[in-house]
Image (cartoon, rainbow, N blue to C red):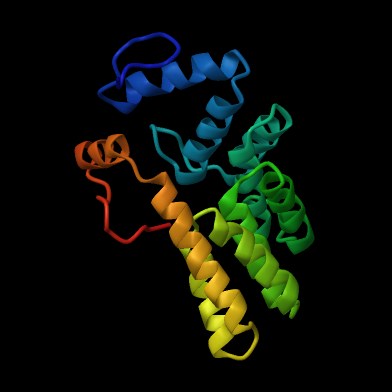
Length: 193
């Protein structure tokens, strides 16, 4: 189960063996491999020197090829000013494109951006959507907004209920077994994002 989905070889034991495998997928224009290579440059791992500009270039290429995660990474880069000039409008644009394709973290981040702009109603709508997808952090943000008088009790109740429903719906014996093998949270453990 841990073999490469493309070449069926075992996972590499070290960075020197991993990088050529990634580069082979990049050469074939695999958007997820291109995004992954960008992440390696972003963090300076796999024996690569940290290069934020190279990471952004790779994220851009991957996003153009259809990687939703690359859109998230571009949004994050523009939000934080990593490898590019900080630009919240561009961050929101990339987050919005990914959110429309179902990226729950991007939907949540749009809520944060709207909240910082003072658009509490729009922020709550984004948080409600991501909470409905099981994103606990969005429930926490609506709870904080409710405590500050910026969201209604109904919104908080709805977010809590829909998040719990989504988490419950995603539970399965196979997921629990995989989490045990990988050392992740087991059923009943709090989700971490």
